Image (cartoon, rainbow, N blue to C red):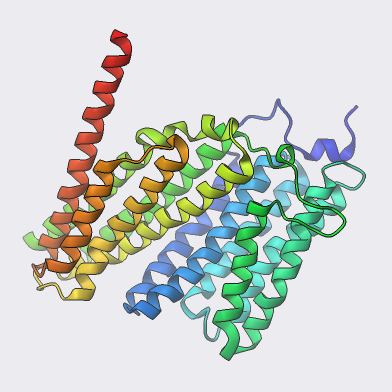
Length: 387
């Protein structure tokens, strides 16, 4: 008969597909991503972009660590269910706080972030007592307890808030890459960090769909507020095309091979690096949503530097993350995508066209990449089959 801690762990007979509560947890990010896009839209400066990136990284790390948690533990266990519900509430509160997280709602944002991590660590450490894997939960609990200090200190010290939160996030992000080294416990071993590749890859696809859904939602709501004239309609269709092309770029082919790659790799390397790279891609989609609102609301407006950089910069950020993602999975660089990145960068500097034309330029570049990618994959498959 399995011990109580063993019953908490994800068994081999537990389906690898995401549970209902994991999908429910993802819904909290609809609000968070929407709030982040609005936060950036209302402060389209370099400083505003960096502040949005700080908040996005914090919210993203709640999602990543919860995905790891649900991969290691049985999602049907009452304790795990309770923690997933708590993480959902914490994510919602962080999303609510986002517009003023660096001002009047700092305590709510930092408190929600810390509560999710510390509560999860405390409960799992207690529940796993006497089990060899308790050391893993204890390491993670110790690291998040340490980072909680600058998180909460920053919430109460406005003048030091940003540097303290940057330091806290650096601790949280580097911890898993180092194996959460802790006095007397050492570092986590590779087998302790194993991730079920199929489950983990599916979770990434689901959160990418959530982010793409936010882009489509912004496009639809912004278009609904226009008079539906031709330029706005064209801009709306271009944003929809952008969402489709980004989705195709994500799943072909590395996105579909992530599960197998994680199963055969060191999870402290690939599992953590893919979390960093998905953050870059999600950031690209947040910026793309801001660009979508600008282009649909003001399609014929001659693009100033800021608007052009935002409209082109979203796909650029996604493409940069996607290039590095393929490099991590295949250890191969896609020169086609690198060239597309440079084309988009050049366009952001030289284009001063109406915003709908700027959007059309970005879509054209993405379309060329998708078509040539597909052609290359088809040619590769034919060559392999003939061999």
